[in-house]
Image: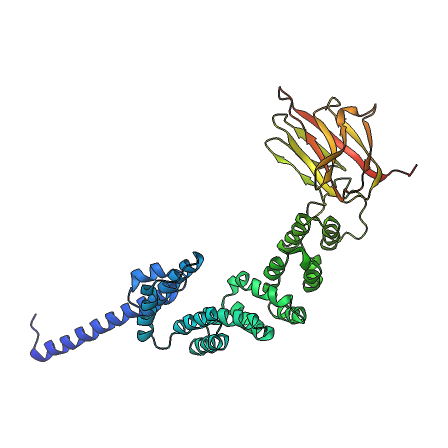
Length: 399
């Protein structure tokens, strides 16, 4: 096959066009890869296009983050890499973020704000620019402006709502902040859970949390509810923990013992039953009772519930069926927080017909009590199988 001079020139032109298209295609792919990985995986992006300014800036900021975690200044080489990348990407917001943070450290807050604003102007969708500007506004007391930046940030990164929670929690504690946050939650309900969970780390925020939760406080169990109850318990505020548990569980008039018939409830622990299911034995609800199997290999707590009884005299009663020689199992009442024993009722003490009763006194200075069914392992393992029913806890009449 022969090609004329004209045909050769035409082919040459097509080859050049094809090569240019190929180069352009590679550039598009590399750019897409850089945009995809630069923020989240700069090392991976660097393999695709090591000298791309976005990659260089992302690698530099990752290095700055590592230095900050070690409370160290970034190296001169890292700062120089930012300067070089900035010259190749004059519209990039990162140099202004560096300038802003540097000014903050020096106490030059007005300079810091102008730098963060310039970073946002250059890249309105920059998460870092929104983040630093929000932090700056909150730090300088302009809460509404900070909330606006956080709201935009949450829309830019819906899956990162948790990262904005500390700022929104700070805003919530400020005068008038809770009303603004309730309006924000109406628009972006996905923010409510992370913010309430953040606030729940401090038991002093209990009333604020319930105010912000509104009707959602009575929804199905949520992470913030368990976090708040746990925070109050660790602080020793058992009564407020119980009150909040009642609110989130929808329990209007609880008795001294919750769910004594073991019918089951969606109310969360620890003021509801916690039942064992493992290698030491198990406890399971049956028809208006509790079926318990203890393997006798290791000590175990097979059922437990946290109580908030007032000082005074009480009576625990039940019916026990099955192994009436069940000396390995006993109900215990333990005073918290010191875990001092108040009472113990071994199941083998059940009278004829399986009826077991135990009287005990809750002393003063005992703000909460743990009621637990404990198994004590003998020298030679022996399995015990019992069913407990008609469980009740009543206040004994004063003498």
